[in-house]
Image (cartoon, rainbow, N blue to C red; front, side, top):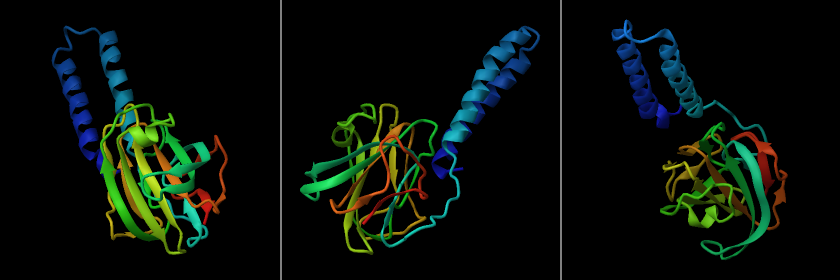
Length: 218
């Protein structure tokens, strides 16, 4: 279980228990069907929340020098050449991963290197699968100079439901494969910008797994 879910899960569990105790206290006045009508949806939603904050143990098996690894679970929704105006100010290949509510929302470091920039920016909360969400939504930008030499940038982008982005690494830190990078609460996306000469290893619509699927080779 991910540490970001500790407070949410504990609060939800306390609420479920409070409702269950209240129903028990007034059991003589409450019909059995109402017990089920109240408790079953609560328990189902509690299990959904617990599932959302799962944090599976994964170890990358691949080329740790040249592979850019998917930072999160999700679906590839963008693979295109774009002009990146904020940091590189030149053309890059953008690979975007959309996370649904059922995906693991923890993020792992995409490669070994040094963090050159880690910056949070306030913004809107549009649907994360829309192209404009990358530049208009609440987001955190992380720039990493890989041990192989090339520099990549990734963005944690909030979605219509997401209201909190957490980034655990800062400028000057070491980015390490298998290391934890951050967490986004509820539906959101990750954008990764790699050099034009990179070999893209994924296709549109492909499902990827964080810290397991190689999305590009630099």
